[in-house]
Image (cartoon, rainbow, N blue to C red; front, side, top):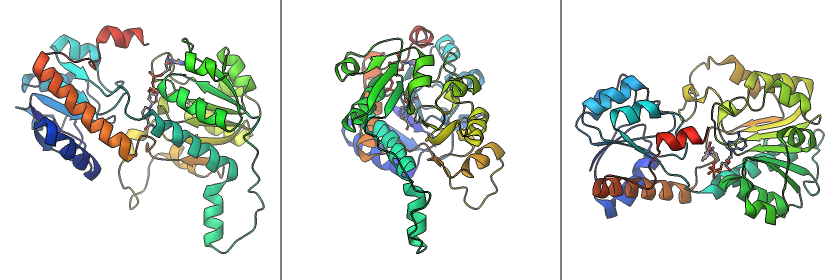
Length: 337
Ligand code: NAD
């Protein structure tokens, strides 16, 4: 199939070229995002492949369909960046990579917890400057801490298992109880109880209209003073201004985020020579007890290879059968909301 890849970096091109040796699709890589300005580049390509920060609205989908595109292959699990109703109306199929390396994301959540708790980010800078004082670097034992997992699917369950290994007490909130989590001793509770009982809260649910700003001022008010909040899922799960207020009051004791509500204007680009205009984001960076990473939780060599292999296999399956097991159906998307 002729595939136009948008928003590609060197690591994407490398992993897809390797995986394509087996699939032999005709691929063109563009570095630019797929946007209103660049959508004409896709004309004549029966498939386009995009990442999480390429937003496809109805107008762009219409232009893609007019240009002969039949398939949109997402190099991601999430599909909240595509207008699914418009795609379905235009007869455009959407395929995704439901799971590429749940270990990568779960392990990154744990990296944020360990760094925040033992203040590795601050210790690293101090020691490099010849400051060996340990004042202000006091941590706590994870053993015995209560960890609240919101969303106990693939990533949440692996995260829970790792935290179980540290000797943490596990509580979870999800409409569906995961038998693997029950077996490792997780107790499912109401979300208000999870907010009230957890020392550490980690978000592993998708962003939907229901979960938008799941952590808002009201939720933060229910938390223990000094709770650690970790978000490796989607930025929109947290009301950032409420989190800043929580950090200022001490209600939130530690914040570790790999995702941010307005990340589309920032993440994945080198802006080190520019003045960042997002004051809310800049405020977050001023707190000593906040660590922000730029949506890198998925970024392991294993995950990149899985993403490339599954994406190209999805496209091959669609080309051969006119359908694909990893297709995102509009009904399924509505059901998950
Ligand atoms: P999954 O579908 O296996 O699990 C998600 C779980 O969340 C399900 O059990 C579902 O029932 C539950 N859920 C849905 N709505 C909920 C709500 N409002 N409250 C509580 N639970 C709810 O998905 P997964 O593979 O574990 O991925 C989880 C999330 O991780 C994805 O939605 C994605 O946003 C995020 N993710 C982030 C990265 C990254 O690099 N930072 C990479 C991959 C995935």
